Length: 156
Image 1: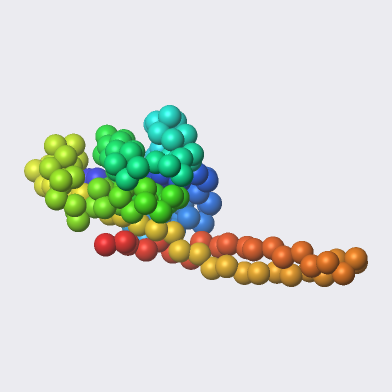
Image 2 (image 1 turned 135 degrees about the horizontal axis):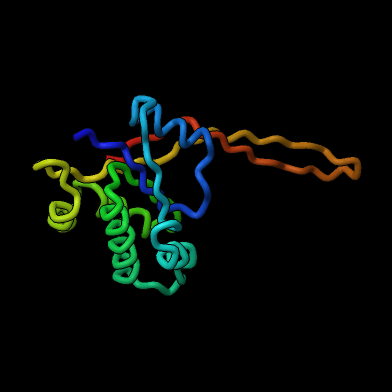
């Protein structure tokens, strides 16, 4: 049975068409690919992820990271993209990858393709940034940042 590349997105924005095409090109050889978002499968976790209190403890953030990764695993994700609050992002990507011994145990229970243990590939979107400055008639300057997707980069 062929595994369809599935990207799980834990991100507060919608992926751009170039990010979606880039994922298909880089990881699905332009074949079929699936994209699942945290907002679709667990909107309550997406809401928590988007509003992490400044007073949240490390343990609280780690528990949220585990819950997010558990949703990705349940969806059969092969690839994982999480960005946002730095501590959450770090722990979620560690838990989703093969780099963390504890989560390897959970992944062995949840993500199995045939008889093969298969952790998710953690990836990040890379962008080019352009700054455009326009001098207004009143002498003030309007500065606009334009971000363009370049490629997906493996984290580990």
